[in-house]
Length: 402
Image 1 (tube, rainbow, N blue to C red):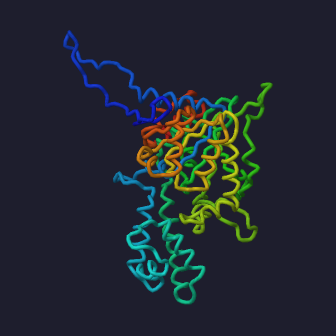
Image 2 (cartoon, helix red, strand yellow):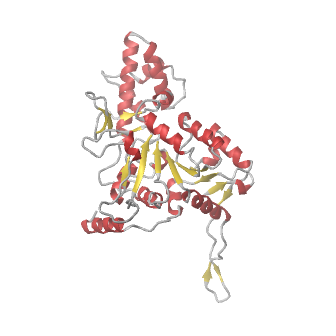
Image 3 (cartoon, helix red, strand yellow):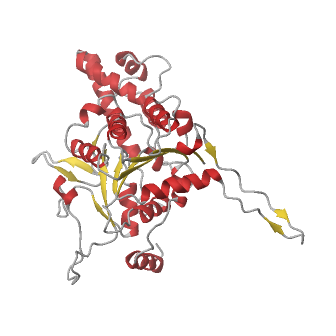
């Protein structure tokens, strides 16, 4: 792991390998106990962020890449995997689909460009001005490609083990009642955090009603849960609760055609998603995405707020620009960016470059940590012990063999 912060003087502090065992005068092996400067600084910035009055977490694809199948392969699809899946499907040919060469030709995709987001963007534009057979073919391509994406992002099994996500929630979502509830924003379509919450006994407030069918109502983000019958003077809030905002939609959301309301529908064939293309910015200003994005912008402009960004690549301008604007306007906002390739990307990504520049100029509010989701979670400070409810859930699961 490595870190760039205001104390590193424009350089990256890299965690050293564990020291080799040496033999002392008596011939016994021991390792010299020297604090690692990089690890100390990582621990400091993480502890500082988590102890903030208002904690906001933004996650991206990087937090889903730790989910593996039995063969050890990553289940969550990257953009490269989606490109290959779409290309292979249309290259195979069929009466109900255009050929891959026709798709490339009609959408005017540059040769050698294998960016699925750009291809879908060009295809959507082509659909708006093409006519006749070409319009029909590119329309069928878009529908087929989106169907492939839907199937690829819905990868969780009912009994999936998500130890990293579960540990992440245990460390961050249990907060003192004197602090605000954790606000977890994610661009992922999958249900990893909902699934992990279910397995660990956390309650998720995601903007949907608790009735059936569950309908999206943003007023529910303002609700909380207290224990009934408490005789304490102050409300007895339950410990295990966090707010979840899915900025780009979810595999289990759909539009009720009759009422035009958004409802939860596990297994739906028409999930409500913002698909990877250039129109993400415009689509983000329709419900329910507008509510999610507005909540995010409001949260990061609060006083004494801290933003922990994990596995997000800063490629979505409609999310990255509000972050930079909040950094400029909110002098009390602390930001930690965690990504395995953040060092390399801070030299090529415009948004990350601006954050790195502020750090180099001595901005003590900002830090960058080069680490994966799996690497960072074990060292996130666990400020609250496991609750009685969590211990009970673990005992019951162990008893049932699950």
